[in-house]
Length: 244
Length: 244
DNA sequence: ATCGGAAATTAACTTGGGTCAAAACGATTT
DNA sequence: AAATCGTTTTGACCCAAGTTAATTTCCGAT
Image 1: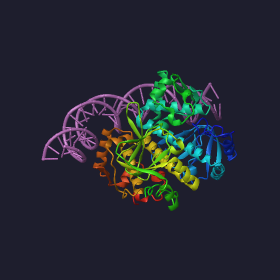
Image 2: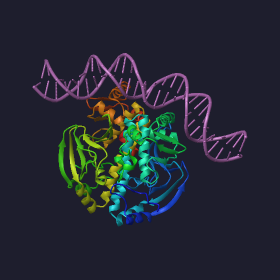
Image 3: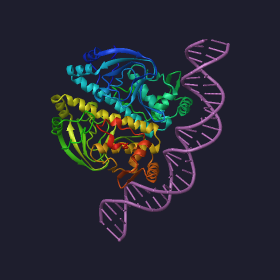
Image 4: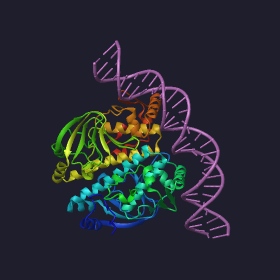
């Protein structure tokens, strides 16, 4: 089902079979979108939200000189712009990073879901608050970590999120992003991202090539990024942490 | 009333008289708290949330070496940790910056409000999403602005938020924070914040002394910080922007 | 008015990451 | 196989911001 990964393994907030079916049948349309396409422009009045089924998407803010800061990346199972449901317009753009499959849910359908199953309101709300918690972890990353720490933290986070989506084994995962993407995520230049990736490679901590991340020394990576997955509100974070 | 400033002037989401009264009567307790006190510790199971009535509060994450990154500051009218209602535990600490008056609302009371006035669910949800939008603006600030831009952006934002709370005239406002606080907000050192404040003072853009901010050249400040108040979802942002 | 501690200020020096430019690489198309 | 285009890699150089430490200012308490 398209909604299988939504809220999966989220602490006490997973959907039960009924709720999932209700959401699934509320999908208005499923589309595929090419890589690097803008899906939502900021300030547009929206009557629908986008569930990411397959692929990677981003949310970002551009500055006056065309420099870009990503404020979120999304993996399969994320309800990318569910916050448009209460907010009505977004303060940022939403785009695909890879080619992607997305499911559209109209806001009227969300009204109906909540009418039928009032507790769903809390779960949908919760889902948007996880995004906010991730924002806060990114603030910590940008405000207090150096370049190595920022990359390390991002890789730990992405490993954890993809693991929870069934798309990482806890040490290895596909990450179809460029070094320029990483730069726009971590507030760095692509040149410096390249220097950091070399460092991590030479220290045998982590290798990123051909869109594949392999974590060789998770303990070291977690330490460099001061990573604590608490903010992801996962049921069981152990598999993405050092074993002891 | 303690709740007068909550959601005031928020685009299409203000409370009507009924809703406000309902929230007001749901307040369990009103307390004053000294400056620099921790109010909520991360990971604690919470059954109540905190509405800030008077004073300034912060939310922050400390790193392993005791460096601190603020992830939010809160002004009167903010429902500081309303996100604890769906999340149950927080991923960060909450503290007062100044002495503060806070109103406590139990989560059971929120359940009752939503039961009685289902549309309140949407408004409370909206309020937590404004905080997330501010997080994103902070990500942009930390990721893509230099020191002057970060301070300028923060001052514009705070001016706008305090204006909307009736605590700025659009050019002048009390800001009882230290330069070290600003540093922890902007991902800088207190020494560098001091250098930037001097620059802004000498350029006759903005003066900050004795806990008072005076914006002398709002046009310049907005430009330096690339500030666009759209993300605050205000009814009418004009008073906090250059006049033309 | 004086004292004491916090906050602000300044200077001297260092450094992490930005900038610019060139080269190498790799996947896709012709 | 050659050409093309985006991406990665590397080097040389520079500067914004960090670090350290001393000094001054401000303010509340006595």
